[in-house]
Image (cartoon, rainbow, N blue to C red; front, side, top):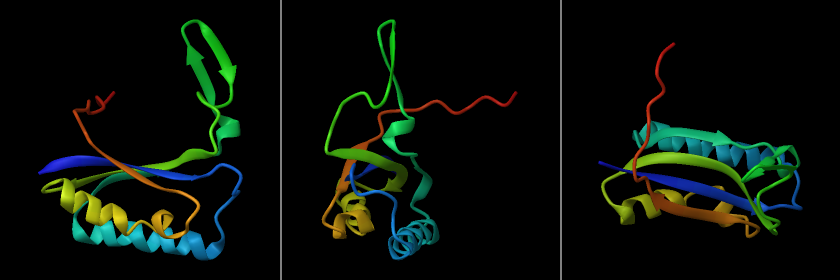
Length: 115
């Protein structure tokens, strides 16, 4: 089965999720886990915690200035892009009207080596 990354976007000025939004996100994640599609998922801290690298230059803040930021990432397994889009469409960020998701096929990866 193919793997797809779901990049979850949110309005940079929106602030923290409400308790209701957090509960909706948890329900969606639980649904993906229960379906067997979820590989991994992470919420990201706000962009004010970002550090960017461009060549030898290190700067505080995100790589680009944007109205929307990547709030989290999720990797799922699905038989094809249509199935991945159907799973992504259920993400609450799509419903809230202030963000959305982007779905991309995963080209490859490296598993961590146990130390």
